[in-house]
Image 1 (tube, one colour):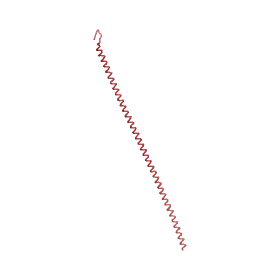
Image 2: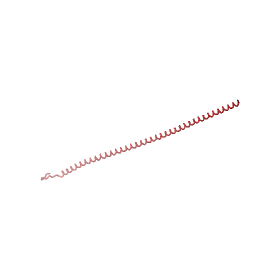
Image 3: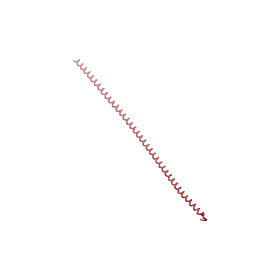
Image 4: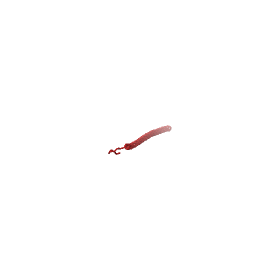
Length: 144
């Protein structure tokens, strides 16, 4: 190993040293690669999970929106149907009131006509009675 102040190294020692250095480099590189792969894997998993969460959230929001729209449509239909029913009932009530009013007017007119006719007939009866009475009086005068 030592010869004339010059250090010489045998070939096996050089080979072992080189192999050791290579193994150390490979080990370090391997550890780095493993960590990089692990980090990439974690990032991929996180991104996938975030994507799933976002998709679920979007679907949930869409479902909520659809449900709200459906509820609004149903509410509008109920309001419209109720309004139609109310209008129909009001129309029926107005028509019924008009019919009742017409019937009342007809009854009043009939009653007034009956009263007027009765009064006219009474006046005529009184007139006829007076005429008969006058004729009877004239006949009595003639007879006497």
